[in-house]
Image (cartoon, rainbow, N blue to C red; front, side):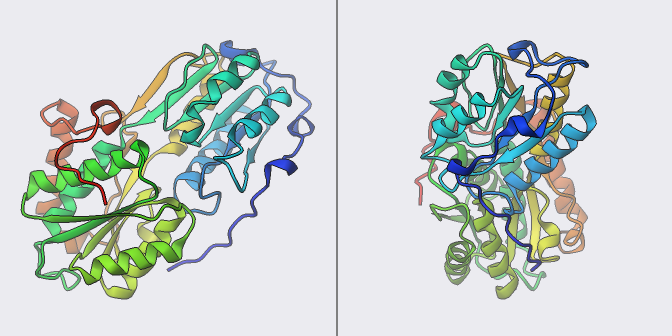
Length: 357
């Protein structure tokens, strides 16, 4: 599996004075910036940090592209305790008079509205959760829809014993980072997709309680493989690197998450459930630069908006087979058309078919 050096975490006490990054003036709150007047931007990095080859890295890539495309100065903000220091991080960013702050950490949902109201000349964005405020935009991905497809694919392929990576047991697995509605959207969607395809498929579930511990992910995945699973979906940021490593070592499959992780271990990642945070970053920064910041709104990105979906099976297309790929595509269209409703634990609570880990 490819390795990449982890980028150093920046403790909140050592946050850069962001105003030094740009000589431009601050934007105008919920009205956004203009061609002549744009404030600097910051990206608050979520749990797991940069270098996770997943959620944070993909968002940062889109953030960088959005800055370049719109002529905006900006920087990421990392903390070794992004959850516990949430309000402090956001207030330090607000004190710098930034034009826009994009926050990738869903646990800041409670503190961000208060901070945003104290800094009305800054535009604020919360990803993965909703927050109120005229100068606050929320971005929600319908991860359950893409995860449904991942579960359906796993349930179909776990019966294909012509693939040497597949055993005779109809068992698959999923590992979440923490037990929370934001993560459980993935898990429940995955389980629903598997059950709709084959109610007899057993889905093992576990939580790593960490988004940056590949060793823990590897151990949990190894345990699932020992229990008969041959496909394990990782929904745990950088911890998922260990799940992919375990799949490669065991001659089984992992399913990646957020970014396209298929090339991390070619042939050992069945597919990746894409959550296109890069596109979201580029879109939000473009709206801000155009003076069209969606303050007070929630932007929803699902299959219909091409905000989530599966990767293109670059290394596993032959193993999966075109008939199965076509079947998954048909399910995708049924979700887009409204013929299949995927359970969303955020709005619907927890279904009876989900019992947790």
